[in-house]
Length: 460
Image (tube, rainbow, N blue to C red; front, side, top):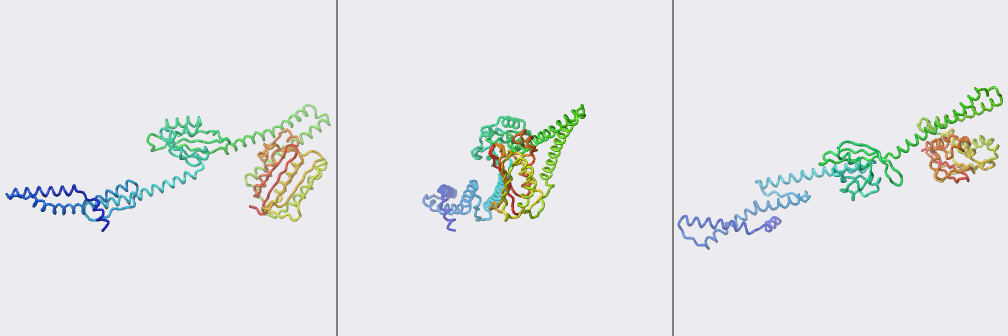
């Protein structure tokens, strides 16, 4: 009640009171003249003033006070504050108006809450998208940028809003396609190359923005860099396989034609040609076998057995396999494998192939009378480490990241000379991966290479 009295006191104005007083004064004077009586001005004043005050008080209590509160609450609603409601003083028209405004406020608050929740949900979806999303209006000015675009283009999302997109994404093909999409309001797709420090490829799809007034466009940027690299690697792989098969086939065909043209009658020449044909056939057989093995491992058709494996026993077996071929060239095989090396869980045949391929490569690319060292131990992270070091031709530093690719060779001529197929290290990498391990390589050109395999004690 005191609050209401204060509100009424603040709302008191002399104009309504003067109006009521003047109206009563005129009415009383007119009435006295009508009945033919004399009029005393002071008497009229004393009679009219109390009635004017009573009428004004009724105005304050029943009309002006509630209307003032309604006006104040509606102003707060216009400013966005929807928590306050109007007090209901009566059940008349003003009371009904206050109830309706309160109901409107509650519904408006609920609607704004739902809109805010939906906006937050859509914002979370946009922020979580790996693809970039850019929305522009009909004039090409940015309405929305999600974090994927901000990260990809290294720009500030908030400062770019409202700017011309051409000034933010400076790319000729993008600009031209955007103009076409804005003019035609039809879906458009293209692939662009972003001129970043590391070249990035994006597939951009322009879609008309419905309900944007003048007609805007949404651009979806999808990073296809990895896919392009895979396509390039696939193309290179097909070209390399074709080349690797065509070379021995051409050689075989040439020697066979020579034999058919008469060289078959010369026994020594025929035997030499047949040995070359046999060697080329063996090389093709190894290549196809390695391709088949690699394909099976990559496709997941080959699942490693879960059994205890001793890497010390595997190294010993590999040494017995290569001791003769290494000895013929004067290559010294050294082994440093501790007896207490823990066993690991894996496939013994596949892990044996890893060590065989690494030692075989070391022998192929090492000069005569050099040294090859195989070491094993614990890396301190529940891993068993096996490394193969040689004193061979080495690998240039710029080629190290690609040595595990299929059919990748640093020097094709020298690789073919040493009998390599370019698949051994790719097979090693995939076998190590399926065992939950990793492989590292260090090398210096002309000083040799070191391949180190880390395998977990327990299969991941």
